[in-house]
Image (cartoon, rainbow, N blue to C red; front, side, top):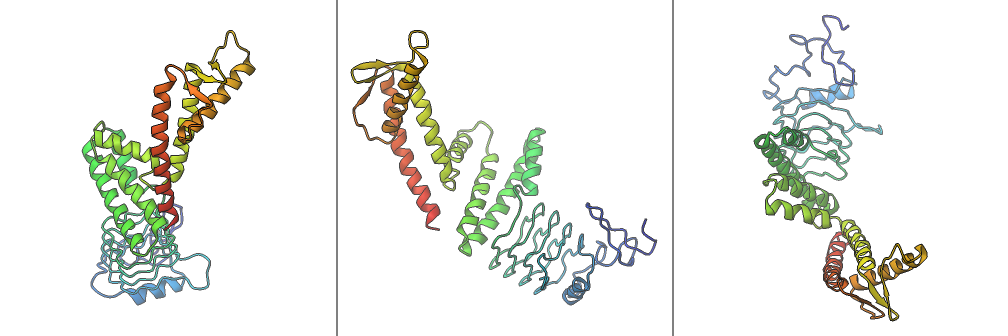
Length: 327
């Protein structure tokens, strides 16, 4: 147990501050009741960091920290400020290279022209953050920001109004990150954020609305234009599914009707028929149309639909692929 004169702040990983108590039960840096907006604490905080001070959980709401330099020179890892609160802090031009600020808050913080290269912000509240001119190469915000996670929980609990509000907040955060990435020419990073932004926008729409269902289909089909791999997967699935249909409904090949028959045909004959169906499906999807295999009966409308889908899908893949490769 800490002594009475020792700060009682303890982070979730079990580590604790060993500073002397400033007031109440916390030190100056961990006391949220201390008004840190009254003067410039930049130099004091830099000295505290370089002297090996405990950096997690700092309470720096509205602090005047413009130009703050928290780059840990000569070390592989940057400072760990996890759990720290920088609500409305003035951090314009700050140097946060390789910093870790997980499960904290940068809500409405001014980080214009700041250096956030390789920053780790998983689990932190980034709502209202200002990033104009900031450098955000290789930043990490986690697979799911806090508002998104809470929105999913609220949605599962049936709290639709609360979930919608949280999804809108998440959409705003991803939009801010996307704009900052695009302004710096980081289009791959921006592509990731725009996908998340559009997913959040979809969740704001009524569950069974046409707009939401259409948006979901576009996401599955091509990831809103950001995932060409989805187009390839869709194409392969369509080709195999159509091949199964052709095998069941029948195709004409070399004057014979090839059709699945588990009773009167051997397994090898049925397998050969399926391979011909698969070949015909590929030829139809790519709109090559050699003519050596022709559809029979009910296979004809299926072939027409596959040919139309194939032409559209290949054109879309080219557009999405070129978009990704030319960034």
